[in-house]
Length: 219
Figure 1: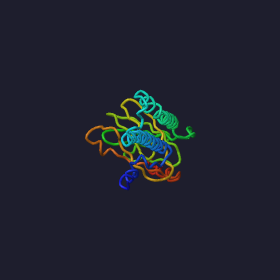
Figure 2 (figure 1 turned 90 degrees about the vertical axis):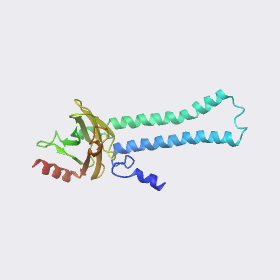
Figure 3 (figure 1 turned 30 degrees about the vertical axis):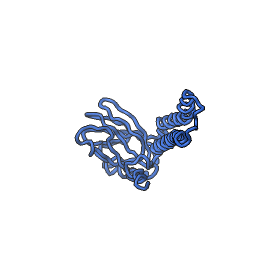
Figure 4 (figure 1 turned 60 degrees about the vertical axis):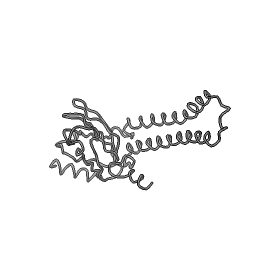
């Protein structure tokens, strides 16, 4: 159990969220896991009952077993999971926040085999490879694009993933609750250098973010 739980942490663990979007995804994963456990326990319990108590259920016709065991019992769990997934999906589509107007836009350009980041709303900013600076506690809108093949932008501890498609811009919103460093990867196989197509997100307090951008832009 200890060895299994150790896989739930780390810089690329989606089960160790550090922001609202990632927390929503982790909550959905846990809900799906417990829902699956409930269904498995139900089916296993019926199986063991028929195995150890031969007379169990013999009075119930086969079609009733299918109706009640295959439909009536699992449906409440499946319906609850589906509705929960829909609500979490809507939450993620809205950027996991109500402060949509304060989002900072960042362009993430994928090219074999590196990510380049720039800030269109910050005058004088230039693209930087491999490092994304963001202010902690503020929603970041990632505009993902590609210059060659399909890549996929993913910071597991901060949010979901989004494909970077040539000739098209896809958008994703992430947020870091606390300053820190978070690992990011390309999650779409894109060639021989795919495994090394990693990057780092550095979340700063507001002054630290401005200093990092100023140092990079020469302001």
